Every structure is written in C-alpha cells, then in structure tokens.
Amino acid sequence: MRKALSIALILLIATMVVPAAQADTPLGERIIAQENAKKVLQPTPRTAVPQIIAQERGRQADARLFGSSNTAPVQVVGPADGFDVGDAGIGGASALALALLAAAVLAVRSTNRRQRSAGAASAGN
Image (cartoon, rainbow, N blue to C red):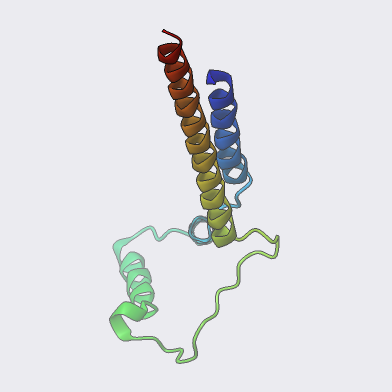
C-alpha cells in the first residue's frame, strides 16, 4: 500500500515539475530585459539640465499622463515555440485530478480490505 502511494506521489511531482522546468520566460521579463538593454545603449546625462530634458521626453511618451497617441489596438504576439501557459495549466490540473482520483481509489480499496479481514476474523471466533 505504501509503495503504491509512494509511486503515485512521485508521478504526481514529476507531472508538475517537468512542464514548469520547460516553460519559456514570461513576456514581462523579456520586456524588462529589452528596456534595460535600451538604457545601456543610451548615454547618461552628466548635468541636471540634460537629465530634466530626458525625463520630460519620457513623460511625453507616457500614455498614462497624456493619453495614447495610437488609437489602433495593439496585438501582442507571443513566441512561436508552441508553448501555451493555458494549455500547461489545464494539463497540470488534469494530472492533479487524476492523481487525487487514484489516491482515493487506493484508499477506498485498502479500507474495504481491512473491513473484510476484520469481519472474517470476528466471524471465525
């Protein structure tokens, strides 16, 4: 019984860990990395005046302050590697449900065996 539960637990952990290890970096992290790369390429202002000018230029491009200049919707396209986080979530949830179902079946079987053996022992007396 313990061996079967140990195997089921190992399989459950493997089904959760392997897809997570193969996941691609999130889109937000890639955008931050691109922005950091742009900052490295731009020369840093040495006095207060160029810093203020650079800050104001950045504020003019901020859509939260001045509204979006582009009225067309922007479609963000992910990588074409075929990995979909939604599909991975569905697969992980189904694997978890299957493992829980298997554990429940094993638990019910062991309970039934104990009851039968206890009933047979009391009937023999």
